[in-house]
Amino acid sequence: MAPTWTDATTVRERIDWGTATLISESKAANLQLIEHVPTNAEINTMIEEAEQYLCAVVRDNLLTSLTFDATKHGILSNFTNAYVAAMIVAENPGLYDSASEASLAADIQWSLAKEAEEILKNQDTILYLKGL
Picture 1 (cartoon, one colour):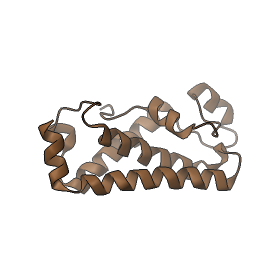
Picture 2 (cartoon, rainbow, N blue to C red):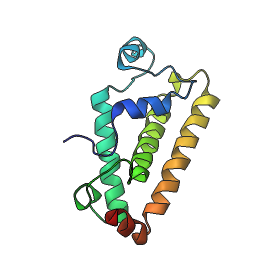
Picture 3 (cartoon, one colour):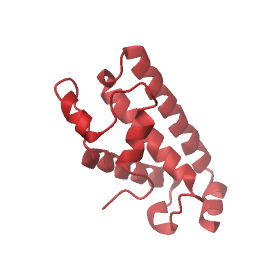
Picture 4 (cartoon, rainbow, N blue to C red):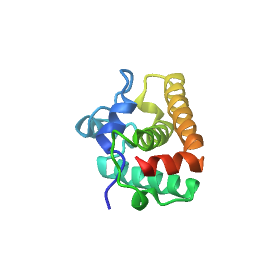
């Protein structure tokens, strides 16, 4: 099974807002001695888990109950990108120049994920997304 709402490249781009060392899987190979930098396959697994988590939270299997369209259902991509980015940064703070920088990056992503999650918990939002 492949991720539905985003991909590893997009998550990597979200982590690298000009401060992280994590840009590509090839660069990640050089960092393996310092931190466990997730591969694209591992990030894709994390994305799938985030998608399933959100389906459980909203009590609707959005992976099957709507046909995903990135221009119409961007909140699903935003949630998944932020959720996975927060997990990666929290697990790999050495990817940043300082602990405070890593903490801030993780906090920002976590806040964005939780904000999207709260919006999606509203069943009216789910009905709206399905109607698009």
